[in-house]
Image (cartoon, rainbow, N blue to C red; front, side, top):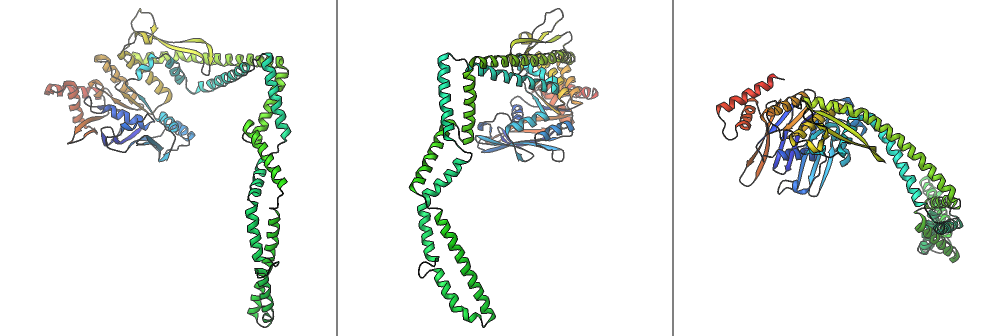
Length: 558
């Protein structure tokens, strides 16, 4: 569950920290107090869109941090698949916000935005006040069904995606291979020329690297040869007053002394070793010099060969291996063009098989969706009944599109009849705003049970409802909160009264700045906040008593 939210330098928030509890966490406050800032903070920590104007005025950086406790072994296993391991059962998602960019971290380690979003999706699910509008878009209905179907549908969808990819590739090949006789002759002639040009070059693996190294030695040989010659002059016996000559004189001068004294003998031995080392050095230096003796003809041949290889690289690939791969592709193409009718016939047969494979995968996917569409609609209807939809009928209808995609060939759409005797109509055509909010709450409840999401956040799920319906929504939120953590922003006293933990969001003004603060209310403060919601600016003793009664009634129904 979500343990802590820490926000710094975001919009009207200087610095704020909230410790959430188990069960139903309710946040209330005056309009404009900053409830939307709170939700925006959470969304940012989960990978939401960030712009520099979200920072608090005058600040260059900000921070949003969420800390979760993770106990479910299934969630831990999924996190480990992302190379993320809870630290003592804790996972902290943080996002440092700077001008024009942000840095995301999980347990202190920098991660990509994709990893942050994937990890967040395992830990928390947010339903914002505008999310109900997703039900108005038919394309989202199929996605909701697939989400409900869960892990079982993933291999089937992967099979469909692979079959569709194969079908598209063969279709592309057929389209590219549609040539008239003249175009085929031109392509054949060009392919034969390119193959001949590559094969005549007779390239060898690694030849380019060897030639480049040799060419560098050739172009640098003059400078190296001069350095070698000068070094040889100072060390070789072939010229006077050099190191070798001087060393020989030293040996002759010290030879007799070495016979009379042990220490002199040791020094004499070292002198002999130095002479031997210098002789070895001179021999190797002489051989090294010979390696830089190139004729003009050798230099020209090397240069011409390198130019040829670089010319072929410019035309056919970045390496010799790439060039030969291109050559093989052209050979295959020549073979196809020489027997063009057979080649097209073979492609058409492959396309037929690919279409059959795609059709089989699409039907398998459709069958699974049809089976779960009935179950999904029934589950949603059960939840809707508990949200004061008493005689409602709901169906999730699947229809074929008549074409394949990576997602199969299905379309899905919810159909709804709110009153008895009414025909089923498209959900988008008949549902009101308040109805959409409750239907989305029902959908979220069903999907939360399927996915075992440990924390659910509802931002103003109460839009467009009141009275008995508000009581029903309150009951539903209490029921959900028995098995998982629920965080809910609300304006309705019926929902706020059900809080296990109640927070107040307040805006306060200083001399030059405005701050948004979030604080946890005790039981008496919670009653007074309920009274404010009930009575507005005029809070009487009667209103306070009504608020207390509402709170006591909600607690008794737990």
